[in-house]
Amino acid sequence: MEVKKIMAQLEAKHPGEKEYLQAVEEVLVSIEGVYNQHPEFEKAKIIERLVEPDRIFTFRVTWVDDKGEVQTNLGYRVQYNAALGAYKGGLRFHPAVNVSMLKFLGFEQIFKNSLTNLPLGGGKGGADFDPTGKSDAEIMRFCQAFMYELWRNIGADQDSPAGDVGVGGREIGYLYGAYKKLAREHSTGALTGKSYGWGGSLIRPEATGFGAIYYVERMVKQQNDKMEGKKIALSGFGNVAWGAATKATELGAKVVALSGPDGVCELPEGVNREMIDYMLVMRDSRRNKVQDMADKFPGKAIFTPGKKAWSVKCDIACPCAFQNEMSEEDAKQLIANGVKYVAEVSNMGCQPGAIAAFQAAGVPFAPGKAVNAGGVATSGLEICQNAGHINWTAPEVDAKLHKIMNDIYDMCVQYGKQADGSINYVNGANIAGFMRVANAMLAQGII
Image (cartoon, rainbow, N blue to C red):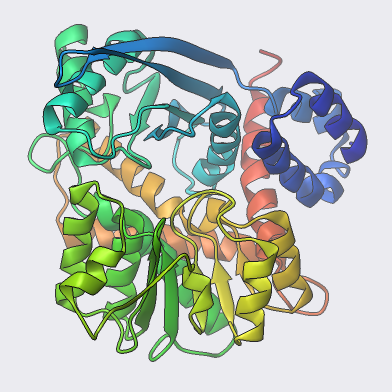
């Protein structure tokens, strides 16, 4: 495999799709050495087949707002690779959603799902719908219209979407209600992230954040260090950041910064239980303003408009909000402030320059496909519960999640350990995820 040659071909075929090309290049650079040790991969053209989705659905979503006006959005589903199992990946509702974004997310999902060791393929979907400021009735009507176009192409043994940015338990409920009516079957495995009581799994909303902190805890232990007393900066205040704040606080760390599109809240004493609970109120308000935390807790939360979480001095930085949210300049600021660990919880949350800066400075950096795999892992566990008609308790699900994250960490160390003893977590995650998918593709023939 020649990375430059493959990338040149992809750039010609997919001009302007920056995020997708960036994600592919990162993986190819990581796996090049291992790939070239397996001539059978090259003979079967594994890479050329892997970098292109199996199929992409694009569809119009027409709905009526509360004023009676007709609105039109674009919906998508990228079914990327099913070598390991039915397609699995979230739905994202955000005005920035487009095909390139979903292709990059779907490509990343292949390796993330592979790392869980569960039978899950990779996919992603969503719409350029903005849920901010919408009423419950408007969100319900949009979800129903979206599912009207998608329902034939999903199902427990075909493609099982979940939530993502802009899609939480409420949206999954509306989507599943529409699916059930259209498909005329109560197939709870068709969607994950459902509410507990009708097919949902306990701790699913907080699972991505919990899993991320379990991974970070292992990174810290790798350096003969401990979580207790560590200062953590998080971007965002949705389910992921809420779960991370909950588990980090439980382990004795202090979350000292939360950020949003409007700025950053510094929390000198760390978040407390009341603040963590209020994060859910902020999320559900759809205002998307972190300043609400400072207004609710004056003196304990200090709001600075226009700033990011990375402006607050911390030991551990965890981008939890959106792709490419951390720039090289942000990374340099964190390094100057003495950051010790960086874990990318959002998919491709750090720009390439930021990753390079951390690695050059010797700061342990872990990529999103490994760190945030706890969410899809728990979705996989939800599918298992649906299939077996069982309900594990919250501690049982948490224990299984913890084990999966420990296993993922061990695989990243196995494939990412360098000659000097350091761990290249990016290479480790990419190689470990790739090998499982590649071997499955090889065994299943040219299809």
